[in-house]
Image (cartoon, rainbow, N blue to C red; front, side, top):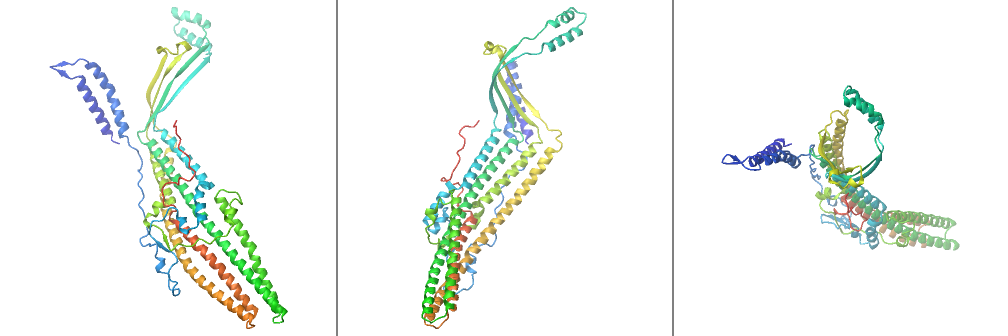
Length: 559
């Protein structure tokens, strides 16, 4: 605590002042020595107080930032070299991850103008982001409240009171005085006149200033402010995390929308193909070349394929509504923008991911968990400080008078100043229980931080694995679609020549529809996996909240 420094400093100041006050020249004390000696008597406790304020320590543990942790053998492109042998010309990934610094607006990597426009508007329009912004403003207000205790409280007051005090109480007091002074002239006079005494109706006027200040000897107020500042940081990171999550959700929903629209286009094309085969089989049946089995089989396939179209239209409408909700728009608000089909956003040749070691710096959930650990550590110190005496200095100065005319006279002044000390002696275990609770909360926050870091790396590793594996699956599906198209062309040609039955054509047509639908789904999944990878890596790669987002300004006047 440095108490020796405090008292030594006080003695040193007193010694210097005494030497000044009692210094002699030729054995004669200098004039003014008595007044200087009095001044030294006041300066020593003042010096002690100043040194206490300057050297006062904060009890409890000091926060130490956790050391960063990275997997010892983790490489962002490890999966690209372990993909195995697929086929000639298809062993390389369509999109290769790199350690280049990514663009904070990572969605621009898809080169989709509509997606870019939606992402830029999301920060302003999303209701979850707006709610998180207001919650951030609440945390900022709590920081202002915690910081206010570091400064003296100063307030002005004025009052007027018209009061009638009890004359009976005064009479009783005079009677008691007369009884104690019985036998004397004063006692007899008081006893005889007490019944005639009365207190008149009084008007009391008062105004003045009052101040109060807690001397933060043990750092309780400082720890409280430190915890509030850490909670503010956690609230800010929570807001960033919500924005990043909503940006990724919007990109995923947009990719899913374009995927469904592509699958609807494929299904519509296959419906037209089935309709052509139905007309062909009907014509051949009328010519007596085939039986009515071919006609009914072709009709069944046409109806089955047509029945898939309403399902896709329903899913597309629901997907657009999901985007409407993310953008803070009512159902149908973005139909004009999104109903027009567009291509599925494709993977770029190279996907910059940044350095893996910077994951803890980028992920808002890790930074939020770290801020909560900081706050929990500061609250332990605050709980420890509650065991120590609380020193408060109170002061007031003002005017008091029973007459408004006398309120401005200097003789009507009234003032007081002095410290008060509160020492907890018995609290029924409240302080001990509170300290144990805060220590347990600190340990829980430390465990939560470790779990958050491990979960972050798990998400990154899973997202990277999915991102690479789906590309290899997409290559296989692309080759399958090419083969199915060729098979259908051959089957149709042989059916027209009478070399194959329609059942063979029907089976080939169904395989093509299935493989085309799976390929479109895989293409969308590849882009969605890259979105999830960017989300797992920390999203925006920036510490500051975007200026385009709704933000609450700080209060300009602090009271």
